[in-house]
Length: 307
Image (cartoon, rainbow, N blue to C red; front, side, top):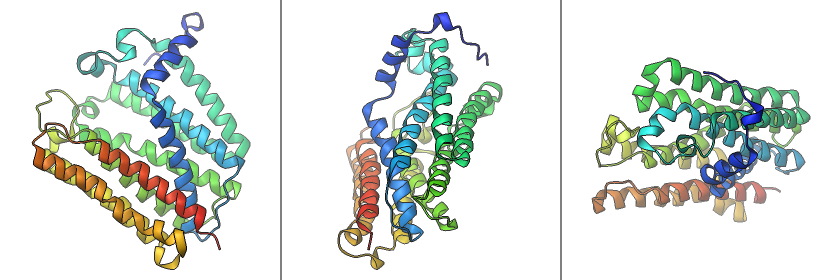
């Protein structure tokens, strides 16, 4: 891939419009909640008392801009696919150029690594790994056709970038003292992986024919794809309860600690609606609400679990 950037051809206005169109406010909300819930849950799981501070705010800001960076990578690596299936995307229509996106990515990388370095060397290395993995995915998709030919294989290869973001938050929070240094903190990744993957399967499950489009249901079958999404939701809820151990908590923390099981009603309701309605598209709203509600509940546990 050619990463040369012509500075004269870069337009901040086009980059701003791209961000407004392709990076909606709920992505920002998701990024902030992810960091807060992950950091707080890791502190609870490892027996610490969570006290978010300036370092937490820096991590949240870094994750938000890095998610935008990854969105820009996707826009470029999926260009050929989008020309056929998403012809209204900004890069396809010319509303933004490759030079714009690459310039913005370079700025984001410098800011993300610099801000993380101010927290700790480990933070800087961890976020650099995220940025480099995003570029590696772009290179792989361009050079290795099987990656673009199977949506499941693509998920197996691309999902680790999310795990690297989780690792960044945990490593950085341990370095700055918000999370105790304990191996048990790593298990919290299971909660956030399950929550994200249940949404990922929900948005790419459909009864309708989608020739050439990346749907899990096209490769696995509709039922298997829907069941996989429910399975990941169950993983997130069960992992949350087992790690938080609400039976050892009191008051609001105990109530919120059990809430992941109750919140399973959201993805289950989506699956039931899909099975009974006969609609082509799997309902996405319950899956998205499950993610946001689960992260909010986990944040609530962290804020109320102190002595």
